[in-house]
Image (tube, rainbow, N blue to C red):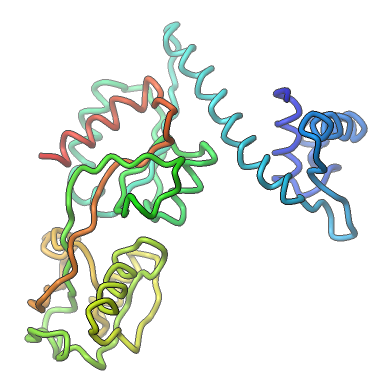
Length: 296
Protein backbone atom coordinates (compact mmCIF):
# COMPACT_ATOMS: atom_id res chain seq x y z
CA UNK A 1 0.00 0.00 0.00
CA UNK A 2 1.30 3.41 -0.95
CA UNK A 3 0.58 6.80 0.49
CA UNK A 4 -1.08 8.18 -2.67
CA UNK A 5 -3.34 5.11 -2.95
CA UNK A 6 -4.65 5.54 0.59
CA UNK A 7 -5.16 9.26 -0.02
CA UNK A 8 -7.16 8.42 -3.14
CA UNK A 9 -9.39 6.02 -1.17
CA UNK A 10 -10.06 8.58 1.58
CA UNK A 11 -10.69 11.39 -0.90
CA UNK A 12 -13.26 9.33 -2.80
CA UNK A 13 -15.08 8.68 0.48
CA UNK A 14 -15.02 12.37 1.41
CA UNK A 15 -15.95 13.65 -2.04
CA UNK A 16 -18.59 11.03 -2.82
CA UNK A 17 -17.44 10.35 -6.37
CA UNK A 18 -14.30 9.60 -8.35
CA UNK A 19 -14.76 12.71 -10.49
CA UNK A 20 -14.98 15.02 -7.46
CA UNK A 21 -12.09 13.24 -5.74
CA UNK A 22 -9.87 13.58 -8.82
CA UNK A 23 -10.70 17.28 -9.03
CA UNK A 24 -9.86 17.81 -5.34
CA UNK A 25 -6.51 15.99 -5.75
CA UNK A 26 -5.69 17.78 -9.01
CA UNK A 27 -5.51 14.44 -10.84
CA UNK A 28 -7.15 13.01 -13.93
CA UNK A 29 -9.92 10.49 -13.32
CA UNK A 30 -7.83 7.81 -15.04
CA UNK A 31 -4.88 8.45 -12.72
CA UNK A 32 -7.06 8.23 -9.61
CA UNK A 33 -8.84 5.11 -10.91
CA UNK A 34 -5.47 3.50 -11.58
CA UNK A 35 -4.36 4.19 -7.98
CA UNK A 36 -7.55 2.57 -6.66
CA UNK A 37 -7.15 -0.49 -8.92
CA UNK A 38 -3.54 -0.92 -7.73
CA UNK A 39 -4.74 -0.72 -4.13
CA UNK A 40 -7.40 -3.38 -4.79
CA UNK A 41 -4.77 -5.63 -6.37
CA UNK A 42 -2.51 -5.11 -3.37
CA UNK A 43 -5.16 -6.11 -0.80
CA UNK A 44 -6.80 -8.72 -3.05
CA UNK A 45 -10.36 -7.44 -2.67
CA UNK A 46 -12.83 -5.13 -4.36
CA UNK A 47 -13.02 -1.92 -2.34
CA UNK A 48 -15.76 0.07 -4.06
CA UNK A 49 -18.36 -0.18 -6.80
CA UNK A 50 -20.02 2.42 -8.98
CA UNK A 51 -23.77 2.74 -9.32
CA UNK A 52 -26.29 5.34 -10.43
CA UNK A 53 -26.20 6.62 -6.83
CA UNK A 54 -22.45 7.15 -6.97
CA UNK A 55 -19.59 5.26 -5.34
CA UNK A 56 -20.48 2.54 -2.82
CA UNK A 57 -17.81 1.05 -0.55
CA UNK A 58 -17.78 -2.71 -0.07
CA UNK A 59 -17.36 -4.16 3.44
CA UNK A 60 -13.66 -4.62 2.65
CA UNK A 61 -13.51 -1.03 1.45
CA UNK A 62 -15.16 0.26 4.63
CA UNK A 63 -12.71 -1.68 6.78
CA UNK A 64 -9.69 -0.42 4.86
CA UNK A 65 -11.06 3.15 4.80
CA UNK A 66 -11.07 3.38 8.61
CA UNK A 67 -7.48 2.11 8.76
CA UNK A 68 -6.43 4.40 5.91
CA UNK A 69 -7.71 7.45 7.75
CA UNK A 70 -5.78 6.43 10.85
CA UNK A 71 -2.61 5.65 8.87
CA UNK A 72 -2.66 9.01 7.08
CA UNK A 73 -3.39 10.88 10.30
CA UNK A 74 -0.52 9.07 12.03
CA UNK A 75 1.87 9.96 9.20
CA UNK A 76 0.78 13.60 9.39
CA UNK A 77 1.47 13.63 13.12
CA UNK A 78 4.88 12.02 12.55
CA UNK A 79 5.81 14.70 10.00
CA UNK A 80 4.62 17.38 12.39
CA UNK A 81 6.62 15.90 15.24
CA UNK A 82 9.80 15.83 13.16
CA UNK A 83 9.20 19.47 12.21
CA UNK A 84 8.80 20.39 15.87
CA UNK A 85 11.99 18.58 16.83
CA UNK A 86 13.80 20.55 14.15
CA UNK A 87 12.57 23.82 15.63
CA UNK A 88 9.38 24.34 13.64
CA UNK A 89 6.28 25.95 15.14
CA UNK A 90 2.55 25.40 14.80
CA UNK A 91 1.87 22.02 16.41
CA UNK A 92 -1.78 20.94 16.09
CA UNK A 93 -3.57 19.13 18.89
CA UNK A 94 -7.18 17.92 18.76
CA UNK A 95 -8.82 16.94 22.04
CA UNK A 96 -12.36 16.03 23.12
CA UNK A 97 -13.49 16.96 26.64
CA UNK A 98 -16.52 16.22 28.74
CA UNK A 99 -18.25 19.37 30.13
CA UNK A 100 -17.15 18.30 33.61
CA UNK A 101 -13.51 18.90 32.63
CA UNK A 102 -14.28 22.19 30.89
CA UNK A 103 -16.02 23.55 33.98
CA UNK A 104 -13.38 22.46 36.48
CA UNK A 105 -9.73 22.00 35.47
CA UNK A 106 -9.60 23.25 31.85
CA UNK A 107 -8.85 26.92 32.69
CA UNK A 108 -5.83 25.95 34.83
CA UNK A 109 -4.63 23.32 32.37
CA UNK A 110 -4.88 25.72 29.46
CA UNK A 111 -2.97 28.45 31.29
CA UNK A 112 -0.11 26.07 32.12
CA UNK A 113 -0.09 24.56 28.64
CA UNK A 114 0.19 27.96 26.99
CA UNK A 115 3.37 28.60 28.96
CA UNK A 116 4.82 25.31 27.65
CA UNK A 117 3.49 25.41 24.07
CA UNK A 118 2.55 29.02 23.25
CA UNK A 119 2.43 28.40 19.49
CA UNK A 120 0.38 25.20 19.51
CA UNK A 121 -2.97 25.24 17.68
CA UNK A 122 -5.46 23.59 20.02
CA UNK A 123 -8.86 22.29 18.85
CA UNK A 124 -11.51 21.25 21.39
CA UNK A 125 -14.76 19.38 20.88
CA UNK A 126 -17.52 17.81 22.96
CA UNK A 127 -16.43 14.64 24.72
CA UNK A 128 -19.42 12.39 23.97
CA UNK A 129 -18.25 8.79 23.46
CA UNK A 130 -20.28 8.49 20.26
CA UNK A 131 -17.90 11.10 18.80
CA UNK A 132 -14.79 10.31 20.81
CA UNK A 133 -14.28 6.66 19.86
CA UNK A 134 -14.53 7.16 16.06
CA UNK A 135 -12.34 10.27 16.36
CA UNK A 136 -9.59 8.33 18.12
CA UNK A 137 -9.82 5.31 15.82
CA UNK A 138 -9.62 7.51 12.71
CA UNK A 139 -6.82 9.68 14.09
CA UNK A 140 -8.88 12.90 14.16
CA UNK A 141 -8.35 13.20 17.92
CA UNK A 142 -5.06 12.97 19.77
CA UNK A 143 -6.87 11.98 22.95
CA UNK A 144 -10.03 12.61 24.94
CA UNK A 145 -10.87 13.17 28.58
CA UNK A 146 -14.29 11.63 29.11
CA UNK A 147 -16.53 9.43 31.22
CA UNK A 148 -16.41 5.78 30.22
CA UNK A 149 -16.63 2.18 31.34
CA UNK A 150 -13.34 0.61 30.28
CA UNK A 151 -14.94 -2.78 29.59
CA UNK A 152 -17.30 -1.22 27.02
CA UNK A 153 -14.55 0.36 24.91
CA UNK A 154 -13.07 -1.29 21.79
CA UNK A 155 -9.71 -3.00 22.30
CA UNK A 156 -7.95 -0.36 20.18
CA UNK A 157 -8.86 2.40 22.66
CA UNK A 158 -6.77 2.66 25.82
CA UNK A 159 -8.36 4.10 28.98
CA UNK A 160 -6.34 5.64 31.81
CA UNK A 161 -8.68 6.10 34.78
CA UNK A 162 -8.14 9.35 36.66
CA UNK A 163 -11.12 9.76 38.99
CA UNK A 164 -14.54 8.41 39.94
CA UNK A 165 -17.40 10.84 39.28
CA UNK A 166 -20.61 10.54 41.32
CA UNK A 167 -23.83 11.86 39.79
CA UNK A 168 -27.21 12.96 41.14
CA UNK A 169 -30.69 13.78 39.85
CA UNK A 170 -31.29 17.53 39.71
CA UNK A 171 -33.90 20.07 38.67
CA UNK A 172 -34.76 23.73 38.85
CA UNK A 173 -34.74 25.56 42.16
CA UNK A 174 -38.29 25.37 43.49
CA UNK A 175 -39.10 22.18 41.61
CA UNK A 176 -42.24 20.56 43.10
CA UNK A 177 -40.35 17.26 43.55
CA UNK A 178 -37.23 18.80 45.08
CA UNK A 179 -38.01 17.25 48.45
CA UNK A 180 -38.06 13.67 47.09
CA UNK A 181 -35.91 11.20 48.99
CA UNK A 182 -36.77 7.96 47.16
CA UNK A 183 -37.00 6.90 43.53
CA UNK A 184 -40.65 6.00 44.09
CA UNK A 185 -41.40 9.69 44.73
CA UNK A 186 -39.99 10.52 41.28
CA UNK A 187 -42.28 8.02 39.53
CA UNK A 188 -44.19 9.85 36.81
CA UNK A 189 -41.76 12.79 36.64
CA UNK A 190 -40.59 14.20 33.31
CA UNK A 191 -36.88 13.65 32.60
CA UNK A 192 -34.28 14.91 30.13
CA UNK A 193 -31.42 12.44 29.70
CA UNK A 194 -28.50 11.75 27.43
CA UNK A 195 -29.11 8.10 26.52
CA UNK A 196 -26.24 7.65 24.05
CA UNK A 197 -23.89 4.72 24.66
CA UNK A 198 -21.87 4.87 27.91
CA UNK A 199 -23.46 8.20 28.97
CA UNK A 200 -24.46 8.92 32.55
CA UNK A 201 -28.11 8.84 31.47
CA UNK A 202 -27.78 5.32 30.07
CA UNK A 203 -25.75 4.35 33.17
CA UNK A 204 -28.66 5.51 35.35
CA UNK A 205 -31.29 3.65 33.31
CA UNK A 206 -29.25 0.43 33.33
CA UNK A 207 -28.78 0.68 37.10
CA UNK A 208 -32.48 1.32 37.71
CA UNK A 209 -33.43 -1.72 35.61
CA UNK A 210 -30.84 -3.91 37.35
CA UNK A 211 -32.21 -2.92 40.76
CA UNK A 212 -35.89 -3.35 39.90
CA UNK A 213 -36.63 0.38 40.08
CA UNK A 214 -39.07 1.95 37.64
CA UNK A 215 -37.30 3.51 34.67
CA UNK A 216 -38.47 7.06 33.80
CA UNK A 217 -41.44 6.70 31.45
CA UNK A 218 -41.53 10.27 30.19
CA UNK A 219 -38.05 11.13 28.89
CA UNK A 220 -36.73 13.67 26.42
CA UNK A 221 -33.56 12.23 24.85
CA UNK A 222 -30.91 14.93 24.60
CA UNK A 223 -27.22 14.64 23.72
CA UNK A 224 -26.54 18.37 24.12
CA UNK A 225 -25.47 19.51 27.62
CA UNK A 226 -26.60 23.07 26.81
CA UNK A 227 -30.11 22.04 25.77
CA UNK A 228 -30.35 19.69 28.72
CA UNK A 229 -29.39 22.44 31.18
CA UNK A 230 -31.90 24.90 29.76
CA UNK A 231 -34.73 22.38 29.98
CA UNK A 232 -33.78 21.64 33.59
CA UNK A 233 -33.59 25.35 34.49
CA UNK A 234 -36.74 26.49 32.70
CA UNK A 235 -39.13 23.52 33.00
CA UNK A 236 -39.93 20.74 35.45
CA UNK A 237 -37.76 18.21 33.58
CA UNK A 238 -35.30 16.40 35.85
CA UNK A 239 -31.78 15.60 34.69
CA UNK A 240 -28.96 13.39 35.92
CA UNK A 241 -25.38 14.61 35.94
CA UNK A 242 -22.10 14.95 37.83
CA UNK A 243 -22.53 16.21 41.38
CA UNK A 244 -19.64 18.64 40.98
CA UNK A 245 -21.38 20.31 38.02
CA UNK A 246 -24.76 20.58 39.74
CA UNK A 247 -23.02 22.25 42.70
CA UNK A 248 -20.87 24.53 40.53
CA UNK A 249 -22.01 28.15 41.05
CA UNK A 250 -21.79 28.97 37.33
CA UNK A 251 -22.58 25.71 35.52
CA UNK A 252 -25.26 24.70 38.03
CA UNK A 253 -26.85 28.13 38.42
CA UNK A 254 -30.59 27.75 38.89
CA UNK A 255 -30.34 24.04 39.74
CA UNK A 256 -30.55 22.00 42.90
CA UNK A 257 -29.73 18.37 43.50
CA UNK A 258 -32.38 15.94 44.73
CA UNK A 259 -31.29 13.98 47.82
CA UNK A 260 -32.63 10.68 46.45
CA UNK A 261 -31.12 7.42 47.71
CA UNK A 262 -29.65 5.03 46.80
CA UNK A 263 -27.62 6.31 43.84
CA UNK A 264 -25.85 4.45 41.02
CA UNK A 265 -22.12 3.80 41.49
CA UNK A 266 -19.84 6.53 40.07
CA UNK A 267 -18.60 6.37 36.50
CA UNK A 268 -14.89 6.67 35.74
CA UNK A 269 -13.30 9.74 34.20
CA UNK A 270 -10.13 9.14 32.26
CA UNK A 271 -7.93 9.74 29.24
CA UNK A 272 -8.82 7.82 26.08
CA UNK A 273 -6.18 7.36 23.40
CA UNK A 274 -5.18 4.92 20.69
CA UNK A 275 -3.65 1.79 22.20
CA UNK A 276 0.00 1.22 21.23
CA UNK A 277 0.41 4.64 19.59
CA UNK A 278 2.35 7.18 21.67
CA UNK A 279 1.01 10.70 21.92
CA UNK A 280 2.83 13.38 19.95
CA UNK A 281 5.47 15.62 21.48
CA UNK A 282 2.89 18.42 21.75
CA UNK A 283 -0.06 16.33 22.99
CA UNK A 284 1.88 14.42 25.66
CA UNK A 285 2.40 17.36 28.08
CA UNK A 286 -1.23 18.44 27.65
CA UNK A 287 -2.47 14.97 28.60
CA UNK A 288 -0.08 15.01 31.54
CA UNK A 289 -1.53 18.29 32.80
CA UNK A 290 -5.09 16.94 32.64
CA UNK A 291 -4.00 13.80 34.49
CA UNK A 292 -2.24 15.74 37.27
CA UNK A 293 -5.06 18.22 37.87
CA UNK A 294 -7.84 15.63 37.73
CA UNK A 295 -6.07 13.23 40.08
CA UNK A 296 -5.71 16.10 42.54
